[in-house]
Image (cartoon, rainbow, N blue to C red; front, side, top):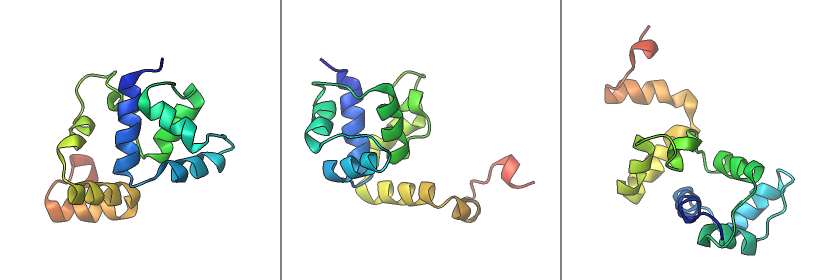
Length: 119
């Protein structure tokens, strides 16, 4: 039996990234990891768990930058609050993460520049 916490998180982030299990299977294939959609469903149901290297590749595909926090192993992290966001907010956050060149402008517009970004 796999880890149900990992299963829930994997499914959550797949959906957050608006991906089907077929999409994930293809992404993994491009990284030389063979995982049929049925296998991915197994990971997401907790029946099995992906190997460590596969899990790390899934994190990259799902844009998970703080792996320990995302899976609940590093204290309470704001990334776990994503469950409280509506679909539009999730899309905006993902777009922000996927466009690092735009992040300084967005931070300035929102007035949330960090000290290091203003120097």
